[in-house]
Amino acid sequence: DQLISQIAAGEVVERPSAVVKELLENALDAGSTQISIRLEEGGVKRIAITDNGRGIPPDQLPLALARHATSKIASLTDLENVATLGFRGEALASIAAVAAVSVTTRTADAAHAWQIIGSHHGAVSPSSGAYGTTIDVQDLYFNTPARRKFLKSEQTEYGHCAEVVRRIALARPDVSFTLSHNGKTVDHWNVCDLAKRCAHILGSEFAAARLPVDECAGPLRLHGFVGLPTASKARADGQFFYVNGRFVRDKLLVHAVRAAYQDVLHGDRFPSYVLALELDPALVDVNVHPSKIEVRFRDSRTVHQFVFHAVQRALAATSA
Ligand code: ADP
Ligand code: MG
Image (cartoon, rainbow, N blue to C red; front, side):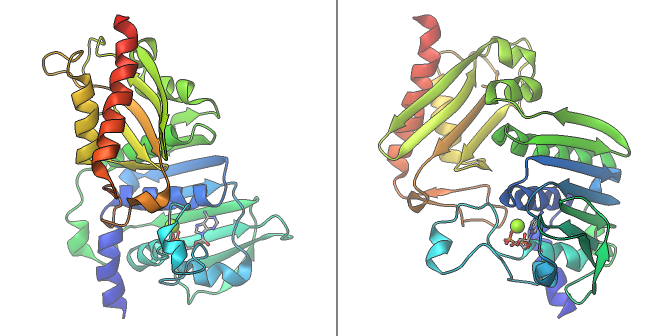
């Protein structure tokens, strides 16, 4: 049973950044508006995420750590219409199988916080703590040394974690984020609008040369900003695409944007953009891959055309 958990965990939790992603999605699903992420040694030593969300009632604390327990799916049809980010109910259980985990949480109606340590077998005990939840993950892969060997240097693992935070922070300017590494605050983003969040995360060059996108066609809406490739420094890491709130790196979408840039992009420059596509969840399958980075559209041609034309029109606004 333990071995099976550890193997299953490997698929969900392939490296520290995957833990960061799962915990951040849970914090957002809980309605948080303030999230702090503390990392030590690239996240391998510690990932502690504190949110001000609705918390977990004490009687549900063991369930939160149990496999296939989710509070987010009430029926099978829900599976096709997931509005929340997480719905498989395996992230916390998987993390707890390969790391030392503690969850400290306090709901609005609780007189004090409660804590559970270790696994769903752990005892739930009273604790101190503010409203919201802290999930503290220490010594990732301490019990699976083979997996630990696959980890890269502290800086590389930290870089992946920071990238996950950037992706999520760009999608949620309505939430404040604080990121620290080895005791130092690295980033702090207050609640703001998307334009400001883009400027903070993508830099002033992007902010100075960006064009707004906001188009609708039937069930499709695309909004965000496309950057003009006037910046002296080409950034290979300035492409952010979201589908129904999730960051994706999807061939079809990358291709559509790239094609729209054809006439304004010269040489080896990369287009920078932050684009969010919203559509009826029934028209898109986000269930394709465990890391949920690829998507499958019911009607991919229509989506491609729509994205292509919307971006092309936005970029044409400068030459007019
Ligand atoms: P899923 O997100 O797929 O439901 P997880 O294993 O990620 O599964 O989380 C299990 C459950 O724990 C969630 O359904 C939720 O009820 C609870 N939970 C986890 N993190 C938080 C959090 N930060 N705030 C409130 N509830 C949480
Ligand atoms: Mg989750």
